[in-house]
Length: 157
Image (cartoon, rainbow, N blue to C red; front, side, top):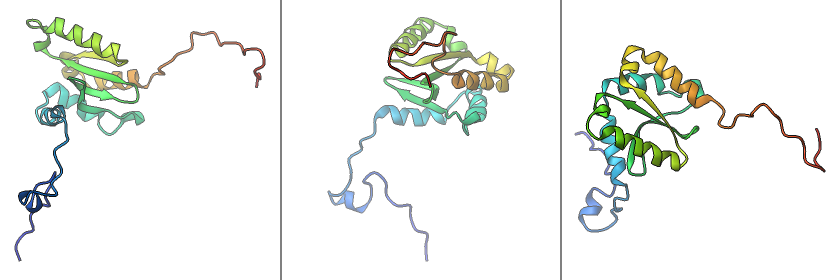
């Protein structure tokens, strides 16, 4: 008995060849680009991902996550935090201006953007990862020190 081939995906296979039953490919192109980018991460990104995967302190991260027309190096959905690892290429040509514009657009959509120099990750990846996790774990709304008093008719308990 020979080996059994893998089952068809996304409408591939015999039924699709006969013109029926194949589901159209509904995935967005940016999803495919993100999947490809996950296999081609830079050394600082790989070092950081080794420390962020597995939800440290219960905080989940995604790598090469598409957001609109952009792709975040890392993303924390719970804190709506975009993490960008900036290497030497981010200092060349018009990249600094493009990075500023991208940050403004993401912040306008409610995301927080945290930029970490690749040299910091290479120097101490554990410290860089811990600072990201600490940033993501902080409360989103901090009290300014004053606690509001109850409005008339509300219970004090």
